[in-house]
Amino acid sequence: MLEYADLPEPAVGDRQVLVKVHAAGVNPVDSKLRRGTPRLPFLRWPRIPGSDIAGEIVRVGRSVTRFQPGEAVYAMLSPFSSSGGCAEYAAVPERAVARKPGKLTFEEAAAVPLAALTALQALRDQGRITRGHGVLVNGASGGVGSFAVQIARVYGAEVTAVGGSGERRIPIASFFTGPFMTALAAGEILTEIRIPVPPPRSGGAYRKLERKVGDFATAAAAVQVSLNADGTIRTAGVALSAAGACAVRVNAAEQLLAGQKPTAELIRAVSDAAWQRSAPQADLRGTVEFKKHLAGVLVARGVRQALARLGVQS
Image (cartoon, rainbow, N blue to C red):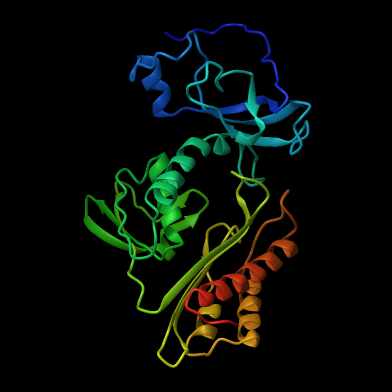
């Protein structure tokens, strides 16, 4: 049973923030807990449902250092807490809060935390995904699945979509067409992600700059290189995220690296190519010029780290 009720404003602990909720997400776990499946003896009833929220901070605890009243944020509350997000106000631990990206509405931001963190933990932390792994995503048009596909993007994956007209292979570089938008046609579902096995003598790196744990990266770069027997670069892959509406592949940087011996001058040229390719938006994390500079710096660091993993100093 669901009831509307008037309750006191939540008390705010020393390391909590009080958020005025503008939007709350609804996830399958909410309906399952409401039905009593699974039965968890430690749950307290009655309880306010809702794990995902987006809103504005109205008060901070005395030990909070990363946020101020008036900031737009989104957050994930524990689904097992008795105080959820389907309310006017929610008290949230500081560590579970991130600033809302300026290009997302409150409604869009409230759909992110639980699904995105589930996908990230499954692929990165539990699956320990690396190049060469095959990933099958059932229900890739859903919350967790759509984020899982995006995470797989940096590994050069290919996706398989199935619809009424049969099976269709889509290169990952063409799969995302905009924020939260994909190349899937009406009636199609994504059934498979294929990640190619890298050639011998390959090394990779992923570098990012984020303001705090759980926040979107200010800028990020993924690099994969393979070497010939003479030490020249056989193949290279360079991609940027947080550098535009979608993750982008830096083809110019890849072309500069291919067939060349690694040098400091070459890496500077690759960094410049990444700077030119990036098209970020200004927000609380920094200006456009600052983010473009970061894109170049992180690509250069990624190239050096990928080469260092092959025993090449540059």
